[in-house]
Image (cartoon, one colour):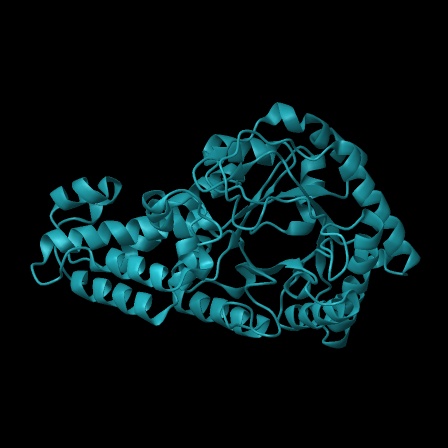
Length: 424
């Protein structure tokens, strides 16, 4: 049976530690891979959208919450993934997209966004009202954050009740790495202190009670903290269990909660398993999934260049380079270094900001050309050995190139699934 988020803390207290992967991506191939994985393993497909990516005004994907939910369910239906395996989440739901406005206006927009998420069937709601709006500090104190969070929770509660939907599950807390990873090389990182985490819980509990929302707070399942993991453009800070020992101990005093770990990308199986064991069972992953998608696409681009005389010399890679140079808005402020270093970052940065370009018509056309060129081709094993050795089992048979992409993403999902200690 798929894991129920409400049971994470209970199971931990009973000694049955379990974890769940939170897939944070809107790329259709990533979504397809996640839903197929859930179907094949009978596991929950927890799929999340962020406030900037998807909101009631469209976000940068152009999708409102109902559009994103429809996309997920349409792909699930085509993959034969039962709807009961799907759990939708909204990440960082708060005033962040409108923080250039006065607080009142920004929070009104955030309320409308939360209403749209809940109405569209998103049940896992991360309340994040920690950022300052116009003429406010960049980061707000716990009291102000909690009072704004409970206002958003009240809207979520009312929406679920009005539409006769299951009551939302909440995640609180906001001490997370920068969205998509840091822009610089990182030498080290300290976890959130247990004292700060305990204070965040206590203040939210009190403020929700004062607002008459204790029932909502009883469904707060997790706290977002910094476990000491991070990735930048060039490197990864791996999880050190010793540094978060006090955070793990705090869960004994707060048995309602587990921790949600953001930016667990590139941690690898050992660190992921340790995170789950130490009280961080909700493992969010995003850029790593599109990073390996790009890796597989570029490998296929090289294979097609070597195999097919009329295909050209790496046209997909060349299209993406030209596109990112012509429209640098998604990377120029994030990649430092000289021109050669920036060129490498555009394509190979761990932050994977190339992911913002795959929906561009020129990029989509180049990917479609690659898929068409290789579809049905019998690719010799030697080309897989050269460009994507682990995929050599695809050699010698009529190729479906999308299957290569889904397989590569599935390798990462498999590591997360194993870390979650699924039942036999």
